[in-house]
Amino acid sequence: MNGVARTAVGAARLRARESERPDRLFDDPYAGAFVAAADAGQADAGRGSGAGDLFSDHLVFRTRFFDDYLSGSGCDQVVLPAAGLDSRAFRLDWPAGTRLFELDLPELLAFKDGVLRELDTTARCERVPVPVDLREDWPGSLRAAGFDPARPTAWLAEGLLIYLSPAEAGRLLDGIGALSAAGSRLAFEYAPGAAAALAERVTAMPELRRIATLWKGGPGEDAVARLEADGWRARTVDASTLATRYGRRAPSGGFLTAVRSDADHRNSPE
Ligand SMILES: C[S@@+](CC[C@H](N)C(=O)[O-])C[C@H]1O[C@@H](n2cnc3c(N)ncnc32)[C@H](O)[C@@H]1O
Figure (cartoon, rainbow, N blue to C red):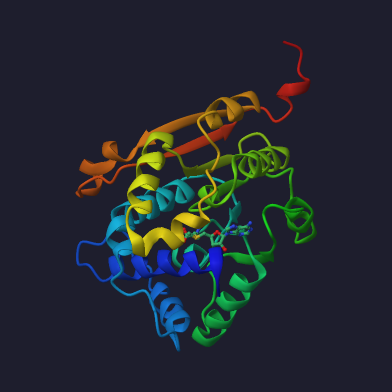
């Protein structure tokens, strides 16, 4: 795997590392197998790079925060745009009948399914991989894969939006909105000020410049207003407010969660 798909390996590497800690905030028993398969035969496998140390606290907080978000969503239809090497279909408890769609680039999902076949493991829900480029007609592919827009859905765009330009991220959020029945939920990382500061630090570290070249800006500071105008009630949470709950030093950054109040609000009389 190359380019942006390879960033999923970095995330899995950090989840594997956290899973080894006695005081871990989550346990991802699949992450190590993905990393081992991705590293096999790679002379420059990224063990111990500065990337790990810089992103580790953030990734641990976000994984735990989004685990709790999905577990409490009350939705039995779940979509992970840019699922990467996420193993939540296998490691979280899901309500009976849950259908979970994993969207990502074809090469990433092909790699992931190869490793899962080797592990011979069974998902705890109905897992549906959907190979797509999220800058193209992914809603058509999602519907063709069996997604039901009439059912409330829990969406999680984790570790994705920074790899999209503001226009692409805006189109993605609009696409999610168009498929979201009332009661749907949405979450992603959101901390525009912190993102700019992180970009500055990363660009200053030579070994991380390759990652920085993949960053395209993400949704921008108007994301909350955009979602609110599209019928979502959005809340933002700063990572620092989770430090006591998680018993860890807080990274910079934060998260956005939203609930779709009325999918037809744009057609409603004022
Ligand atoms: C940093 S990884 C995050 C993966 C996963 N959500 C996680 O937190 O471990 C970014 C993911 O975004 C995916 N991605 C980036 N741009 C994409 C696009 N245009 N279409 C589909 N997937 C994309 C990559 O393939 C990769 O799996």
